[in-house]
Image (tube, rainbow, N blue to C red; front, side, top):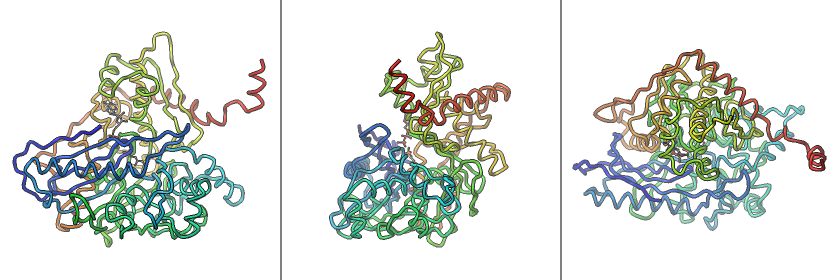
Length: 535
Ligand SMILES: Nc1ncnc2c1ncn2[C@@H]1O[C@H](COP(=O)(O)OP(=O)(O)O)[C@@H](O)[C@H]1O
Ligand SMILES: O=P(O)(O)OC[C@H](O)CO
């Protein structure tokens, strides 16, 4: 599927900044008027995921690069058709789905396996094995947190890389021979865009590196102790750069000669695009998953309540790095893809709001879409989805509404943790991402958390953040906190229910969570299952 729209603006003179946004479900190339949130044109194409087995999720590395190239060419063509000039694109930024892991051969430039996508759960047993190696039989998922800010989980790249080394013979051979190159999606794209095997750069930025479990969160360098823990060689790793600097020059196609001057993980890019550039500001992006980032300024806050410590951005080699506390939810909008593709309860996402609005409430139905375990704040890889509170009166509409509420409750879980870690309750939450076109959803989010919800002016804050950082590199005088458009007005949604009702609903949610946790391990043991079968 291809989509793209053009600005009706008649003034087509530059300068422009381009942004590649390679997300989990689609890639897009967007052209902005430099220093503003004005989208001149864009081209977007879906990227298929490959579900090899239960819990596995892969993407074809060549499909990713080809799709991004098609998006670039498509958007450039639209720019020219509108009367603009490609040479007026001064620079481009890259932003990407994070943690997804790629490994390729440096002699051929070809991938040695499909990309393992961030929500892939095949590495559950790798995590179990790694837990066994922790001294004193501690089996503590937080063992590495002081070094990298993250708990041991199938989510992160280091665990996926270890799985590739243990399970794919060509990967192990290439690693041992010093022929392997590792990268998250940004690194793979940058390598290919700057020439691949003919001189392509091997680089990443601090935000993407902070999701690997291999970077030290204080020094912002690869850490020998972490590499030793995961049994991975240093030779495979890209150079860690800041998020805004000169990374390389595009080698071919319409953008040939244009520099890449920014690289950020997509959630961090959205933090920048939402202008949450001061300590205490937070945003939530609702796409495939939902990711809430709270800017903690230059200080590292180690969460005591299940959040991640991550790099927010570092806008230049010499700039101070800003950190963030992150609450990650793996299944948000993806729950609707599941209702559509697996259950057939909806036919398209356009129906969600209509259906959920047909009922006044979810009739006590609670849905925990823990398809691949639960991320923050539970970090329970054995959790599985549960749908509870069903009765004879339950209809599809109640289930659709309960699915929207599930995302809202998960955000409440995270905000409660943030409140405990940072002590200051958030007064307002900036929101963006595919789900935020849904007005009822925003009302439910505001109701179920008891907070003002402010919708971003443009949905594409992720690409915007990458474009802003790319512009900052070439125009250091650019004030990233200044106005991005003529009017900065946002939609504000305020709570309509009282705290008693809110808290009662949340208690029920917690009961549903209890039923979901440890489902994998709490299922019948093999012996019990056999005797049950024999009854
Ligand atoms: N009206 C809607 N209501 C609820 N969810 C929606 C709606 N429209 C799209 N979505 C969900 O939003 C997600 C896509 O958002 P997007 O920000 O493009 O995702 P990503 O960046 O992860 O690729 C999909 O999972 C889809 O189910
Ligand atoms: O592609 P998105 O927008 O779902 O974002 C994915 C995240 O970066 C995963 O950590």
